[in-house]
Image (cartoon, rainbow, N blue to C red; front, side):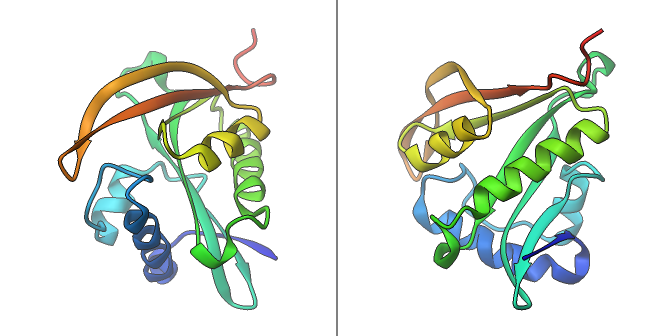
Length: 163
């Protein structure tokens, strides 16, 4: 397996995996795939990570800023998606562990995510990688007309922002 950067050149492969996540109805509130320009603008310039095997993207992860306030400059929101045929093979764990490593190298001290409560595989994956549940948002938004709850999870670095 090979870790690569997400770029405009491999964005179509990322979108294919994202659409597989959309189809589950438990990955995101979004219903449509973004275009490169919007995706690029909405994600931090670093920690755009994907994993390939035999020239095929198996999954990806990236960070979005949580606030424009400087006090939160070391806090980012995690997105992680694994191709349908690559789930259950440790790809998500590889991605999240690499994301943690690279995010700390870039000064990020807190990673956070909101996961639909029924997406137990994602919650368990994040827990395996050191995230902890810090909250619960009841009926925070609708997905296809159905109210969804979010489990709030957080990873706090043990090496960045400890002064």
